[in-house]
Length: 391
Image (cartoon, rainbow, N blue to C red; front, side, top):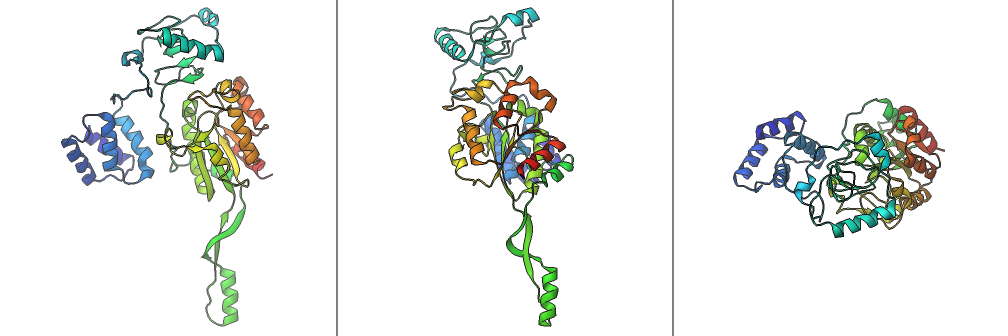
């Protein structure tokens, strides 16, 4: 399996040498990984990856080669849910009539009921419609059916209806070296251009050189700064959850923007903007930038571009503690309005097909907050967004 891992890394164009592979083998003989998949991941990454830009590629190959191996790490942070509760049971199929009989509890009642269930429940449970367990119709647990509830111990989305996720989830950074899809995406971004000669004088000024040489009577080379796009862009990417379906499309945009804009900064958020953003998804729980600091770091002349499908529970936008992952002191709507006040030139690019927008309530809410400055992540949509930012 180690040889398969090594060849897979080479096929993914990671610069891994035979010497580094042998170093990993020596470390394994010394039992430095302590027979833990998680420890082996960090050990192999330390031995085989020399440039942090290759971390994302390494993670992809590692996930493909060692798919199915368990690390034994808790799926929920600081939670005491038994492991056997988290095993996926056979799905319980309901008739349409049974599904219609299940009603959403509402936010306050949902949180109050969860607290009471945790206090009352003494053992494991599966099926049923009340306790926290698996494959039932209770609003709390995993792999069951309920139109609105709290997801606990489930390895992914099914119905996209949870208002809270009680598990620690890991997201991945967007790859900046992703090969561009349609070249027109890059050309569309060029509508947002303001060329200026800034920086060191490194480009040959041919006309200046000819004039100076004619005047001096000898060769007099003249240099000038290179013309660059002086527009400043702040990109905020929604990451994880339903955005996993749009990763490749967003990576194309990210790669094009990195090429086109000299002055560009990017950060990640999940679903809606709250009190913190981050640069590195692997350390998003420990290395965050307060949104207040973000608002006071980048001047008002930056162009703000949100990229996300705006598909979430309306609670996340309108309510305190409405975030699907944490208890937020202020609603997402408040932070969005502050960002728009700080950077008046702002747009939202949505990878969800525009024809689907009317069917998701939260998309309409974000659209109104953005004052209708939401555009589809298509060639025409990008051109429209760039035109809006240049007004």
